[in-house]
Length: 247
Image: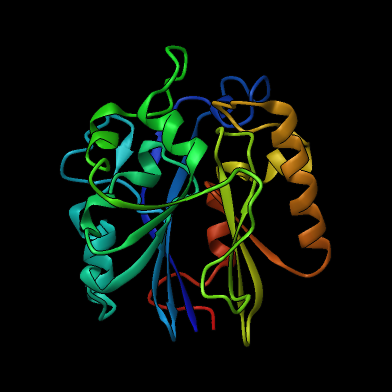
């Protein structure tokens, strides 16, 4: 097995409080957008797909076509058409923009997340209609909210409930032969301060559930798992980034 950590560009936010509500007001921040590729003996898995840098134009976004998930996979020697599964931690624009690049894959998503994304409440501004519309014809494996899903039935790739940031947020535990357990938190922990200060992530659907999810992450960390946060720029210096990989 191999796990690639792929940076899909960066976003420049005027205020860190976007990620740590009611804290760090007035502190600008640059955040990375991360995507992941798992090369498993039974098939390729992508976790989160980043943005489509051709159509997703945002004044705060710094990303090039070369940083798209499909382009980066090809440079590593992989073809998007060969991906068996795509796991979406949730369906905000910076995690689902590249989904149409994988028409042959089965997408693993919580059912409640699909419903929230395809029919959002009026107050929920986290979902982008045009990007979500492109996912309607994809093939989905819809998980229950509290389900722990063993992708290959061997304990190496587990999707588990981490609701809070969104109604159907999930995170991924990857158990590698040499590198051990690595947890892809998604936006359940956007930056380290969410975990260390028990601050719910920004654009939060349910703060209580978000903090409960952090309790689980803390336990995993205490037991030796490496947590990779959703948007912590400082953490990049400590990680093996593509084309290097964990194994």
